[in-house]
Each structure stands twice: as structure tokens, then as C-alpha cells.
Amino acid sequence: MTLTFVMMEAPFENARTVSVLRLIDAAIRRRHDVTVFAYEGAVAMTFARQAPHANAVHGRTAEEEDHPLPKDWVAGLMTAAQQRGVKLEWINCGLCVDERGVAEAIPGAKRGSPADLWKASEASDNTLVIGTR
Amino acid sequence: MKESSMESYLLFESQEPLESAQVPGHYELAAALKAAGNRVTMFLVQNGVLAARHALRSEGVPRLVAAGVEVLADDFSLRERGISASRLSSGVRVATIEDALDQFAAGRKTLWL
Image 1 (cartoon, rainbow over the protein chains, first blue to last red):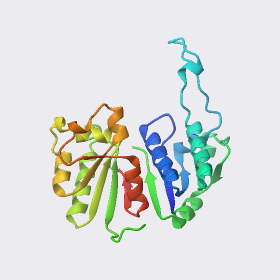
Image 2 (cartoon, rainbow over the protein chains, first blue to last red):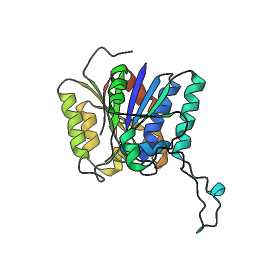
Image 3 (spheres, one colour):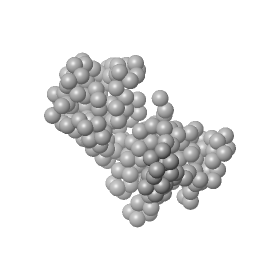
Image 4 (spheres, each protein chain N blue to C red):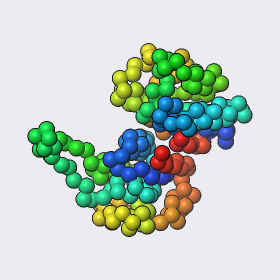
């Protein structure tokens, strides 16, 4: 079975990010092939230059803060898919990437267009669009 | 596996009525879909689970249950907010994200509200 998730939320902003990634994780664990089409702010989910930071107010180092980074969560999902022998295709809307200057993506994230979303949806058993609020 | 009926819906509700004035409209949509003879599940996630507490004294979720909508509350979101199953309105069932995923994979028409 192939499932498509269409994701709009920018990283670090809303719990929707976590919820969508949990759904994708569940799909991979169920051994479904997954396509993710990220658009608008969600294209920054895979931005390679996301970086952890220290907390000077509380006197903690970046390691002690241990901030989770969305790019690492996505990379983890890609690894999980590979380990289970299923496909996780992550497509970032190219226009949205250019607007935000986040073309430098982690390995495995591709650049695409709305036409790729249409093709993915056509090839999928179901599609879920998760917009922002 | 596809379900036999094309009129099966899965609605994700991630907000509570006190957070967004749109939420009561989402409840009305779910109830109307059910009243039209469809199979409807509302999966409460994130702050959406707050509306399932019986202490809220809100009619929203109990009305959904009474209308025959299957109302599921995400276990992860409940744990994050310190809400135990005993504090949920009657008829609301604790479920996992896998339960929602399975309904989506079964071909239900799925909306994130």
C-alpha cells in the first residue's frame, strides 16, 4: 500500500509537525510505502543547516540542551524505511524552497513541483493533506 | 484492504473549542456526515483531546458520541497533558496513532481539520 502525506507546517512551530511524523512513522512500521510532499514552511523540515544551540540563561551547553531537530527526525524516518524495505520519498516544493533559501537539504530529500504531488496522489491508495491553522 | 463502503470518514481534530471558533463547526460536520448515513470517526489529537474531558462540561463531544460518531482520543496526546482515561467523557475511547493510520490506509476519506 502507498500513502501520501501533504505537509505545510514549518518546523519548530506547532505540534502538528510531531503528529504528522508520528503518522509517517506508523505507516513505515506497518510497511506501507510513503510519499511526503512538503510545501510552504514544511520545506524547511529537511534543511541541512538546522543546528542545536546552547542555553546561556540556564548555563547549559548545546549537548546538555539536547534540542531535537526536525531534520534528524526525518533522517530517522528515512533510515527506518530503509531498514524495513519500504519506500519513503520526501519531495520538497521547489518554489517554496527557493522562496525560503533552504535548498541545502539532508540526503534523501528531493526537489519537486506540484505536478509531483499530483502524480504521487494518483499513485497512492490514500492522501492526507495537513495544512496550517 | 479497502473498506466496502465509500462513505467512511476519518476526521482529525487537533484543536479544542476554546482554542478555535472553527471547532464546533468541525463537530457539526462530523455529526452531519453521520446523520447522512456515513461511518464517521473523529480522532482527537494534540489539544483536541482536551475537549474530551468530562470535567469540561461541554456538550460538544458528548453530542458527537450520542450522534453515533466514533470518538477516539490519542493516547500520546493524553499522556502529554496528564489526562487519564477515567477523566474522559463517556463513549470516548483511547486509541493510538496506529489506529488512525490503519483507518486512513483502509481508504477512508480523511480530513485534517
